[in-house]
Image 1 (cartoon, rainbow, N blue to C red):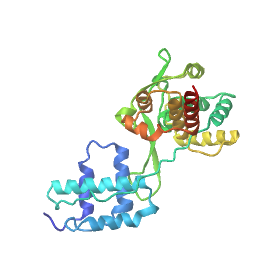
Image 2: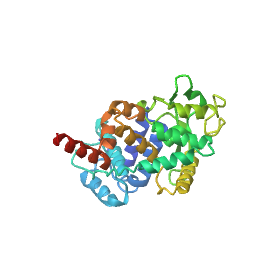
Image 3: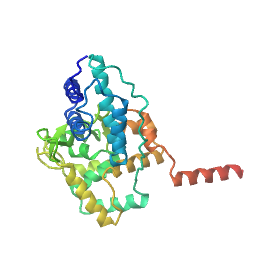
Image 4: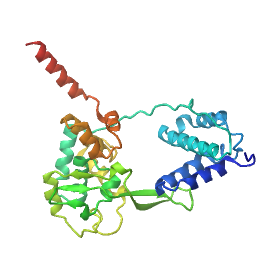
Length: 307
């Protein structure tokens, strides 16, 4: 084993070994390493890295850093130390006892009244941005996916759309310490995110009115990348007009999934439409009874017991 090698050096070797890693994931790992590891435990010799060092790091983060970020950091540390062990840079370090708090998933959805109001406003003086918001509400598309949609992705005869790309912002590779980002076209989030989704008839008819060049992005009406933040800002303005409480664009996806469950759509179908990697993710996120569902179930029970 090489005693003078720092953990930072190992982290760079580990990153370089990730040949199949998507660019945005690699940039994200580089950012997390720079922000949280490099100046804390990065300069420690790889032979002296131990569970105490790592526990101290996570204790220092605690409530100041989101659990999702801490989970990514723990993955980076576990994977890089496993890489170091496999390549004879250090002894095996068992990190199985390091557990992070479970992240609370407080999913916000639009009520049926809010959804109805939103739809009525969106259908007034219709434009392509309003249609795309409706499309997300009825298909569960992510904001990056709808931003990356081109006219060639719409099959008007089969009344479906195909997710082939997404538009995202990544941190400037030249300077990971600043907040500057660059807009890029990327492949979908995962293999299961590449999917074909049926489009409701009323949306197909609306889309036909705005059909343009096949190579054009639907939202920019050109070959120029469309910034997802523009659609998010427009969505906020619509919410304000509707006097609906402020919420994230992702609420449309949550609302679509919840309404699908309420309408008795089977979970496997919903999971594939959402592009989840497993049915378990869909079950964990969305298959939980709402108050209305509980009330309806109890009323059915009372009706049954009264027979």
